[in-house]
Image (cartoon, rainbow, N blue to C red):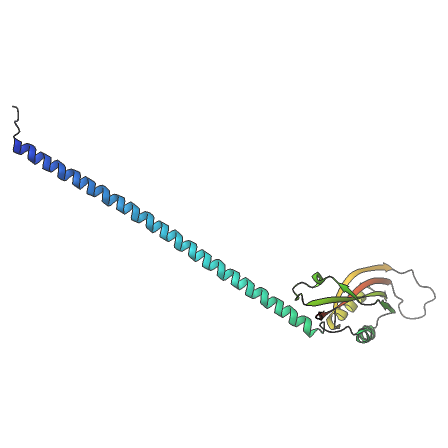
Length: 206
């Protein structure tokens, strides 16, 4: 049986369809707004994470710079306590060598110290550019009973000298057997070394 629709029926259908379209539109708008809000939240989270990461990097850099400054200050203080920031004191160096030789009961020690010369500031990195470096080269020859004599001598020299010691070269060779020795043990080795005695002074203003 056919169903006849009246004008009132069509009017109600149109109203229902219009209401459905409005509801679908409102639903789509709500979904779009939700998606936009979610995207905005993700963007804000990413920005916040980037800001936190930047703050952490700045903090790490600040700590590194602080530690570097502390290291430079400690190095400067250590060099100062060693008496390196002063004019060279050759007489004290000679007395130190004599004292170590006597206390270690070493064999003959011969040395010659050349005049002082300027050296590259990169020798001791971390010092202010307002300082200049000067070195006196010492040619050293020693007779040894064994290698420890040389190592102990250099360790004592470095530990007590009012200068920064840089060993340029050190060669050790066996000495020919001595004949006609009466009592005692003769030296077995000979050492030939070049050592730089480095001091630092403040540059004079022009």
